Image 1: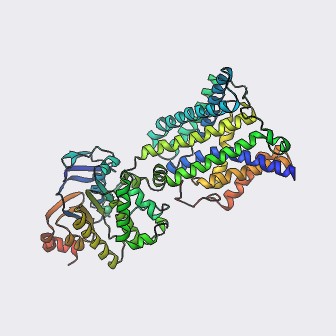
Image 2: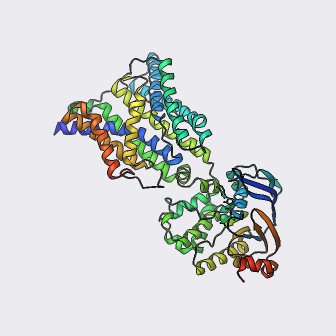
Image 3: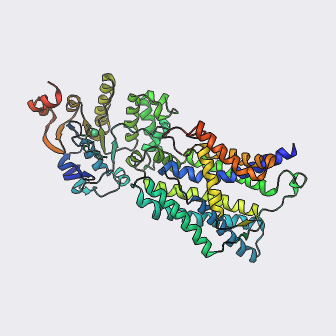
Length: 235
Length: 300
Ligand SMILES: Nc1ncnc2c1ncn2[C@@H]1O[C@H](COP(=O)(O)OP(=O)(O)OP(=O)(O)O)[C@@H](O)[C@H]1O
Ligand SMILES: [Mg+2]
């Protein structure tokens, strides 16, 4: 479904990605793990068109998207929940969700999806008229994921959804990720520092070090890999 | 009491015009953190467009109110085109440059437009036709309020209500607020940020053009320099209210209008500007973010 072929991405003169290649099949959850500064966020931003790779290509359903503008990429069905959630702080919860559906025209469908989201997250329903910036971290993460779902993505990119959240909330978030995949068949590209949890929900995993993909395997195999255990699982 | 009322209403009139211009400053600032120094010139160009169209329509035999409306539409279209183009050629290429660069570009744009109109027209004041008719029913209170004042106050109020509605409830209005608050996230939900910025310039320029035609037909003369003066006042109003905040711009403009009007009426017309800018200094000392300004991120 998504094919990243040998991309190199730069910030000014700093090369953040070196020939990164990676593949996601339809209906899969894949995870990309790696230390701080490895280039995980840059990989996701390259897919969304926020930064453009200098070389290499990104194909979505066979079509090149690496020169497209971000709004065109969203239009194709790729949505991202960025690192740090990026809730619109002065829009209400319901306006934040409206923005998720910005490119959709089917009013009826939007309304139905909104109700579904409110059923799934009663906390958001209670706070629908509250400004996004006033929500707790966990609530903001739920809102960020919900906002992305409002676009009915075919491919969902999640950048460290567990960052800074209490263990109980993290559990909840991962339950939701599983549920999204099972109920709507959405393909998921999950970036995580919490390698243990990520590898447990994912089908396959990639390990990234200083801008390069260094390992790629079935998630279960990575979980039992000695190097991964030592470096990322803290065992 | 009549005198007080008269000053109150003339302050409200002035304030309404300042508000129409200040909204453009504050909306542009809210979305790209740029003080668009050339915004006053857009207002001036609106007034000139209206003058030219009004002169032609007068020759063609149109009457007062219909000229006002047609000339207003022409001014809005022409000023919007200028605002849109200005952003495209003078600010967009500098989007990622240090903040001082677009500011200098804006000052350059302002000087360019002033001189361009100066050369194309004249440096003299040109008479502007009184397009707002005298209403019969205002005759008994004409010493308190003129027809022009009534029209300016009412049309500004309607325009501001429409603007609020647009920004609060429409899809593009929400996209504008979202873009002002977080551009990267706006892109990630599929908003074409460049388009939203263009739209902001178009809306701001339209409001300034309307302000231009209303005040020109009230005062009765225009020249190439009116944009500079009005621009500074409106900018003051926007800062006073809290730059980036829409209700702030309106509030700041009204306070400024009243300050000037009462200072003129009870002290001396020489002190109009002294009071206006003294007020600005005081606000900036005690509330640097402006009356309704949030200290950092709140925009539009
Ligand atoms: N806007 C930027 N300007 C310059 N360098 C950047 C920028 N963003 C990231 N980098 C650099 O690119 C490299 C990769 O960063 P990236 O954010 O992709 O890492 P990451 O794997 O997501 O890290 P983390 O786990 O901390 O989120 C880092 O060396 C970082 O310093
Ligand atoms: Mg990151």
